[in-house]
Structure formats: structure tokens, C-alpha cells
Length: 424
Ligand code: GLU
Image 1 (cartoon, rainbow, N blue to C red):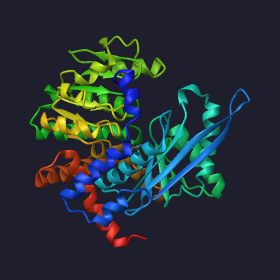
Image 2 (image 1 turned 90 degrees about the vertical axis):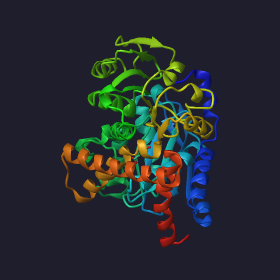
Image 3 (image 1 turned 60 degrees about the vertical axis):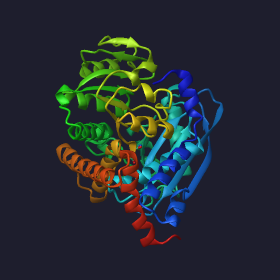
Image 4 (image 1 turned 45 degrees about the horizontal axis):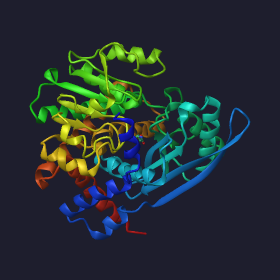
């Protein structure tokens, strides 16, 4: 997770500027129509609300909450809701724009959005979280909608919050519309395979990248930063594919074992240990800022944004970086990684497995007909491999990094949609 000072500094970076920098580069490569670039350089709609919540001690706390819709050119907007202390308008804008590009790379019929509440869910009781979440759903009554704007989980939220939101929303509109939100628990219209989907997408992208570099997965080593929903499933699935996962880390500890960590043991450990790795004995603890620079074939940053910067990028030894998190690499680190010949499978491709299975959940909700886990996984893998193939082809055609190629892939689709629909 980087040293704490690095993280504090990182949080002050302007994330939306990171998006615009890449957007600009990709736009120049394909001579994107300037009016399309102008449209996509702004968010369509930004909502900020103050949510008063009665806390368990009887006091009222007021929380800042956001929903930003970046684009609805391709379809209704889609994107998660994040609960974290560093949530702010700039961050939500960037995350919303990334959703637009991510959905386009994965070829989903969606635009992009993101929501967030500035809070520390770890310090709140379940009751407080429920009241806050329901207040947020009420405030978003005219924003969310099955064909309008469809939220999902992100950092700090899970199926539990999605269930409260769908319940609150359905009560407000007086109808049962499960597809208004995805990432729900299975028994109330969630999709099999959704919970592991982002990690699964990371695994499929890793295998594709290894194949391109002619590295045998059974002889490859991996380091995974983050052991939440994305990191833990990614580590498990890579481990199941025969990769040797030599290090894992979360906010509590980083664990290294050059002989390979048994990920099943690590998962069992965190399930009994408040979801944190601290104290896990399947390897030895190392300082967290060493995790990203360990020798390995595949590095998966699956925790926070802005963790790979110009200071640590020169020291990264991985051959491939597969971005499980949104925005883990700063633009100034991109050039360093490219010069070092490290293949970076960018976030808007690498972590698009989650929203891809969200799309499947929405389709199943609309049809009222549910698929088996195998069916979901098979369809997911096909979508992911197709997206990887398209990005790879654009990388070769335009002689750019995989990141810029992913933006190019997205922009080609979105440009057509913007031109077809018009600007108004
Ligand atoms: N929050 C996830 C992401 O950043 C999933 C979004 C969704 O499923 O709509 O991709």
C-alpha cells in the first residue's frame, strides 16, 4: 500500500487531470473530432448533497455525498458507489469518466458515472451505515433508474449496501425494479459470478498478457497489492491458474514468500481475522512500500489510486502490470514504465470484468431469467478476451502504450455515438 506519507501525498493529486492527460494523448493519435474531445473533457451532470444521519449516540452527523454522470452517449450511465474519507468532487469526476471509457472498451451499452460518500465505513455501525445509505438512495431518487443511471459497489461498499439502495428505491417508486442497481446479493436478483468478476477479469487479462509475452503461467510469479474484493479474488484465481503468488498486501500488512503463498490459507485467515492480513504466517512481513518493487513477472495493484508514481516506477521489476484498481498509475509514471518496457494492462481494460458481469446482472434482471455461474463466467471470459484483442490490435496499429490503445478503443466507439446522437 505504499508508505503512509506516499499515500497522503498521492491523495492530493488531481485525478481528473490524469484522465484528461490520457484522453488528450489518445485523441491526438486518432484525430478525434475536437468537439467530441470537448464534450468528453467535461462531466454531463454533477450532484452533491449533504446527508444528515442520526448516529448511534444520538448526535446528527452530516455527510458529503456525490453522484457524477460523465456520459450517457452510448447508453444509461453505469458505475459504482464508493465510501471513503478521500472522496471528493475531483475524484468522483475521474472515476465517472473512467467508467465511460471502461464500458466502451468492454463494449457494454452504457455510459459512465460514479458516486461516493465521504465517510469511514470501518468506524461506523451497521445501523449508521444503513441510515446513511438509505438517505443517499432517497437523495438520488431522480438520478438512479434502470434505464437512466445504474449504480453498483465500489471501494467500501458491497452487496449489503446495494440491497438497502434497491429496497429504498423500490419503495419510493412503488415497483420492484431489481435492475436499478447491480452487485446485489444473489437472493434478491444478484448475478452468480458478480462478486468475483473484477478479480476474474484481472486473471483473464493476466493470462492474455502472459501469452503475448510467451511466459508460461505455471512458471510465472505474481505480487498482488490489495486483498479486498478485487485483490483477494484476483490472487485466488491467479493461484488456481498455477501462478506462484509471492507477495500479497493490504492496509494492515504486506506478506512475502519467495516460495509462493498459499492463497486458500490467506483467504481462510482473513475470513477469521476481521478481513485483514496482519498476523498471517504464510510468509514474512515486509514494509508495505517494498511490495510494488519486488521481483516478479506480474504485479497487480488492486488497492488504491495513485500508488505508482515517478519515485517508485523506476524500481518496479515486474514484466507486466495488471491494474486491478482504478487509476493506480500516475501519468508521470506511465512514461517511465513504458521506457522500461513494462507491459501495463490498464485499469479501463484490466478491471472491466466487474462492470461486465454487472451488465449481465442487469440483463438477467430485465429478462427475469437467471443464468448459471458457468454461463456467466464463459460469457465474461469471451467479452474480456475480445476487449483485450481489440486493445492489443490498436496498440500495434497506433504504436502506443496499451493504456492509450484502450482509450483509443473506447473513443472510437464513443465518437460514433456522440456524432449519431448529436451534442444536445
Ligand atoms: N465499481 C466497479 C468499477 O469501478 C464496478 C462498477 C459497476 O459494476 O457498475 O468498475
